[in-house]
Length: 111
Image (cartoon, rainbow, N blue to C red; front, side):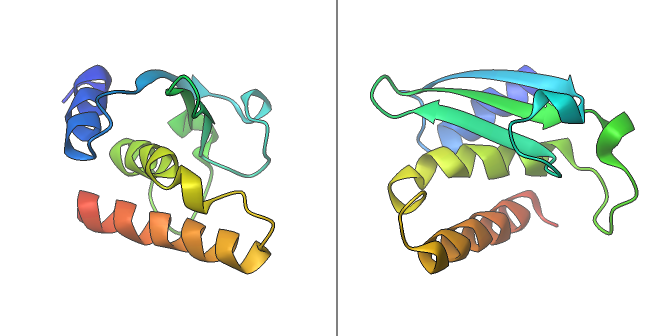
């Protein structure tokens, strides 16, 4: 399935059809605001829009978990879905929310 089709499919499944997404893939590490990540989502709740960046497999490196574009995409879409639970002043809550997002993305994609 092509990347745009994956986005539309997961957007529908996750009930995010009222959001506008732009996906930038084949990113290098310098394209990310955070270091050591394979995906990143900058979203604005007010206008329901987001830019998702996904690392190029060339820069993925030697990681324990193999590169999976769909899993990374779903993970970043789930950040939008859980936006109200993230970025709180409670560091434990933020860590738990991020782990939940990772667990769900793996379960949804079948990893």
